[in-house]
Image (cartoon, rainbow, N blue to C red; front, side, top):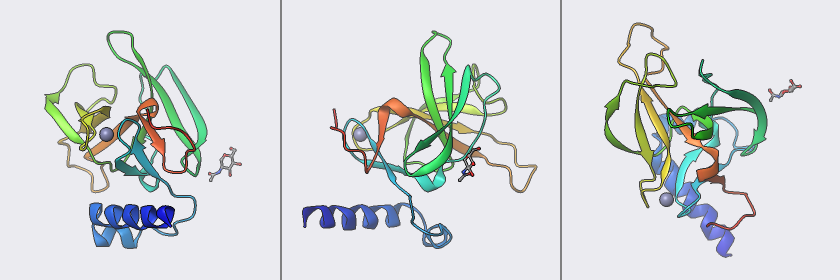
Length: 161
Ligand SMILES: *[C@@H]1O[C@H](CO)[C@@H](O)[C@H](O)[C@H]1NC(C)=O
Ligand SMILES: [Zn+2]
């Protein structure tokens, strides 16, 4: 019963997050999972919005089966301090974007970056990448890179730390 309520609540929340138009073309629900903040459990993204956006600076790129999806592109990105992050790129995520847009040291040329923090607890989840380039109709103007170590799938049988 609690589980059912949980699912209903999560469904309700995620339907509110994304517009009705978007949710109508989200297709079948099969295998889709919500991604949760590993620190507080808040629903921060939907695996439906995972997409592949290779960084030319990636140390390593591999395909993994994650969050109910096959062949998810996981990139190992390294910041100027030498810290490694395993990152998945998402077209949409719930982020509190922190600070001004930074142009330097972007992993994605043409995109500035800001810290993406959990809107519920402030945990660092990853980054939001933004571009002001509107030349191409299908050009993506913003996306997110989420740190795998800082999120978990809703079906993960793991403890929230
Ligand atoms: C994932 O990759 C494997 C191996 O390349 C391929 O056979 C399979 O069809 C792919 N699955 C999807 C959903 O793209
Ligand atoms: Zn959180």
